Amino acid sequence: MELKLWWLKKGSFAVLDAGCIAVSVGLSYWLTIHANEGQIGNSFVLGFSVLTIVCCLIGFQVFNLYEQVWRYADIRHVLLIASAVTAGCGMSSMISILLWGNEVPWGFMIMAYESVLLSVGGIRMLQRYRQRRTVSHQQVKRHILIIGAGDCGSLVAKKILDNEHSDSLPAAFIDDDSNKWNKKIVGIPVVGGRDSIMQAVQQYQIQDIIIALPSLPRKQIAEFIDCCKTTGRNIYTMPSLDDLMQGKLTVNDIRHVDVEDLLGREPVRLHLQDNCNYIRGRTVLVTGAGGSIGSELCRQIAALSPHLLLLLGHGENSIYAIESELRRLYPGMEIMPIIADIQNKPRLEQLFREYAPNVVFHAAAHKHVPLMELNPSEAIRNNVHGTRNVAECAHRFGSERFVLISSDKAVHPSSVMGATKRMAEMVIQHLNERSSTNFTSVRFGNVLGSRGSVIPRFKEQIQQGGPITITHPDMTRFFMTIPEAVALVIQAGAYAVGGEVFILDMGKPVKILDLATDLIRLSGFEPYKDIEIEVTGIRPGEKLHEELSTEEEGLRRTEHQRIFVGNPLLMEERAFEHWNKQLNELLLDNPLHLKRFLMETISSSNEGVKMAR
Image 1 (cartoon, rainbow, N blue to C red):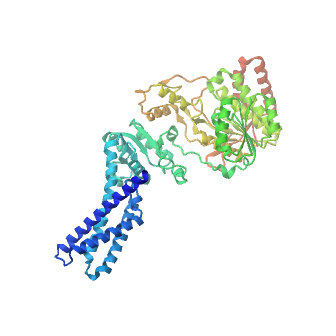
Image 2: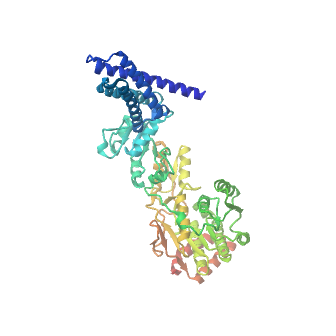
Image 3: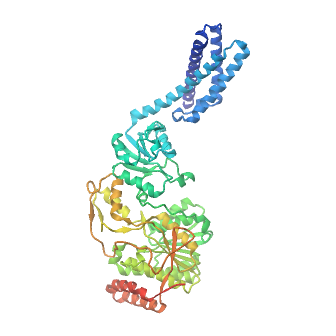
């Protein structure tokens, strides 16, 4: 049935072409020969018309004119029409000269060629215009403003116009290049620069804004987003130019503006395949493999072709989820899910004895600051003793590398969680002094989208109609994406020689209040009008501003311009062991004093530190 319809449509087009050619030849005869009282009669005109129709239809078939979808026509299709008409008319002209000799007027044949070209091309462009106009006037529910009238912007406009099922219509362009103002691109006006965004939104009744500037730095894109946020319209962005050039994404991958677009920082790009031979063909253990960081570690490590990937976690559901995902993505890879508690040292020893991991990534930890303030003994057991258990097993059973996932909250800690992470750093730094295993830490700030982080909580509060709650209007935090954090962790394992603390240049800290107002606007609401923002007060253990390193640690640049390394600070061995003994005694006999002892000891530990060489 479909084939029959195709032939019917193709035949209809051929009949229409034949009619256009006949009219074009007749009109050319009337203007060039009949008007000048030429001697050639109607029989010549009839014969030339039939000959031209036959030759042109053959040319159209050869050049596949009947297989084209004309609603998507562009300059290439215009050239295709010109080639087909030139071939057909050229063939008919040569045959005419052979049949009628010098009696055929050249002026007539030239005008016939031009008329056929205009008529055949015209009906196809008319069809393209008619189909687009039908969409424009019958289906349009949303008008779109495109930021950027360059190659990408025009391509986006064409894609939308060419989609016959789309209910959207590009209404106007915005571009800071004044040379483009008051001109049209693919029939759409360029109405001005960024200062004209609000006026364009009102004038053209815009519902959606697409920022089509993939080559701009993230900071400049954030500036355009700032200009668009106050319009209250949906804002979309394009993939990055790198992703477009590498073929990872296409212009069809237009997406909603996300919070990471507002950070004003280029994402860190690491070429792990070039630097991570220490993973390829090795047995790799990831603790906390079911968490936000741990699961992404497993994904990126799996892409580096380890011999065996061990997924260790305490929660069976999350371990099952990441195991299922990896088995689907890497069906030939050896993967072993392990349910275990890092506080259970005999169980860890059994696992290390059985699997002998070459590389360990330790991501298992309690990270929720307010909860750890209420449960300091569990924070110590998991974050300090658990880390010691895994690290000592790595040392005892000959692991080559051990990478600890640390936190910016370990710098001048004001919370139990931060203090335990600082203590975990000290544990592996001391172990590194006497071990052949290469121990290192990676320290970074908040990650976007992790479980329990501020962004998912804000989104949930917006969905519930508000209010959004923040603890202080001046509070700032460093942010990065989970893939960035994980790539840094893996790269740090390649750079490490033992004992270092690696730190990522995360750009400028972001005000949580600004993040909340941006997220409200990006959700289509107005802060304090549609969604309230309430200040609840700083919670126990929270700091107003986080730091990534201490002055004593210093920072040195590594091979990667966005990765820095700090000098490890060690307590004297005797002081460290005495401190650890007191901590264990308090865990058993006086847990009420744990928190005060932990914070006081960590705060005063700089008095007994030495710079590791």
